[in-house]
Structures are given as C-alpha cells and as structure tokens.
Length: 227
Ligand code: 5RP
Image (cartoon, rainbow, N blue to C red):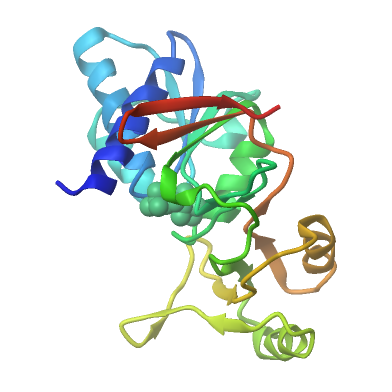
C-alpha cells in the first residue's frame, strides 16, 4: 500500500464517523470514497449501523450493494442528511473540481439535495487556485463537435476524454470534455458560461457547496469546517 492510498483510507474511515443510525447518506465515487463505502459497509455488517445509501454512480452502487448497504435513489428520499465524496482539487476558499471519475453529474445532483457535504481528500488535492486539474464538462453527444469548437474558440482548451482509444461514456451515456485551463481565475463566471451553453449537461465546478473537508496528512486526518 503506498502513501497516498494510506491517506485515502485514513480519510475514508474518518468520514464514516459522521454517519449515525437512521441517516440517509450520499455515497460518493472514486478511489477515496471507496474506503468510506467500505467502512460504512463494515459498520452495517459488524455494528448493526442502520442507514440508507444514495449512490452517485453505477460503480458505487455495485460496491455498496455487494457490502449489503441498503440503497434508495435520490428520487425515493426526501433529502440526504450527509454526502461524503472525494474531490480532484479544493482551493483555499473551498471551491472544488470534481469529475475525474466522470461521475460529477450524479454527484452534483445528490450533493444539491444534501443537508451537509463532506469532501475527503489526501493533501495533494489542496491547492491555492483551481485549474491545474482539467475541468470535466459532461456534454450530450449530439452537437458535441460544435460545442467543442465553441469551447476551443473561447480558449478553454477542451479535450475529448478517451480511454484505451475509446471515447469515455458517463453513466448517462454522455461524453466528457476536459478543459485544460491551468488556472481558473473566476470560477463563478466560468460556471455561468458553461451553464449557458446548450449541450452542456453538467460541469465539475462545485462552488459554495462543501461544509467540511477532511484532509489526509501523514500526521493524521485534519478536519476543516469550510462554511
Ligand atoms: C468522480 C469524482 C471523484 O470524487 C474525484 O475524481 C476524486 O477521485 P479520487 O478519490 O479517486 O481521486 O469526482 O467523478
């Protein structure tokens, strides 16, 4: 197990402490959220924890189901008590980029209906400004080449996400255009621009959303109350 994996496990396990009996819990996606799901699954099995999970991807749904965590969809619950998820970057003012795992559409929907949002990250994800990590934008395939040109003309440097020579498809069968920006100076303005473009389903800017960040450091997890 390498150092980063250790830190991911540390924050995943720590975050599960915020989950108590009766809660409706948003279960995030990715290699850090994996450990939180594992720990909640362990508590359900070994400690009789009773929760309802709302998953943010097929991957997490399969994982949670295999662990015996009871699940409902976001449309079957009145709200979510707490959502615990990873992030790709968190700026010093607690804005975030998500979607490295192509799950940011469902992640943002579940987060939107959550009373509390906790992000769990290893310390490498904490940055001064957003943008080194390419910003994922989920787009519907129809018209995506026109949209690509518009984004390129606006100097947003889009790259169609591919894996093993194949175009990546999201859980909703859409494409991802990753914007290689290096530094996002005004995240709200960029979010407004992206929201205004037909064909954009959702972008990975998660602004003014997170309440608590748990950062994995070699000395132990650090809990930061963001807002
Ligand atoms: C998936 C996400 C993930 O939370 C994000 O990519 C972080 O993943 P990891 O914990 O594997 O680094 O937004 O869409």
